[in-house]
Length: 382
Image (tube, rainbow, N blue to C red):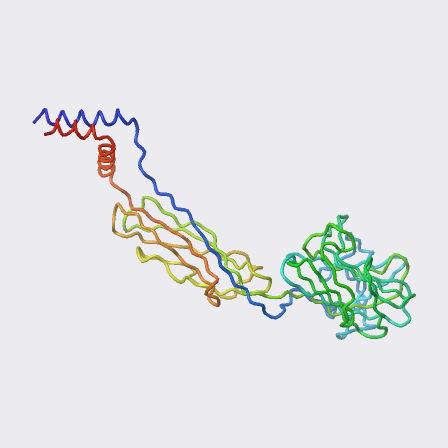
């Protein structure tokens, strides 16, 4: 009997010396996400608008409603006016004031993809003199750099509106409110500029007044010109995007290792609407693994906009009672209004394997790999 025990001990020692060290298997499961979106056009959603009616008559515009002077110069100001108004009672007046040209801008962020429409209404009196300009820039920072995507010049001498450095003119409509509309398609790098409903010019957005622009709307600029000009008026600005169905996106990791049976583990992932500005996402958990007990907080949501950013979903799982088991599964999060817009998270949980079981499983694998050891063990233990 003692010889048999001694023989087994010798075999185990030989196995350890023969192999050196053992590397026990570990479980690594990484999250996988599949985001499939089908976008359907919806009506234009207003991203920004201003009609100047809430500002005090005669007040300087810089510092109000996000407006400021070019290069943040407070003297390059337009003024709130009740002389003319498309929507009562106010508009903004652009002219040379006390020897300084009004050069009023409003900056934008996040307008760099999709389709957009920029609209403004302009009133030019019949006694207007000089040249005044309406401009949209794709690059602007105080002090530069600047890059103009378009610029319209209204010339009292010719009585025409023209796009800077572009062919084509239209007659100025005096003494009435006229729509200026710019339709932008960033995906196509294209813009169409309309004056009083007539197409004035169409061209690349990035190759505006000069090459080298970017796919972005940085600001609108209302400029009284390089030479003294008299008053023109603007009112009822709006910037709208072609809204699309929300775009669901999720990020996070749900991966638990060596979890005691029946114990509780937690984790989290995020839900975000990465669709067009103004779109709203309703989402829900469609399914989760059948093993364990799962809790999600929240388990659904409505009205999530891209501007809100990502929200966290907290997850709790009560582990199954089965020990020495690897559990795999999926959590599916769906756009409640579009079954083709979803994300699947691959998840895993493992319950611990006993040291005794690990050791003898390891020994068995080594013996199977080296038949000579199996023969030697049989002779010693037979």
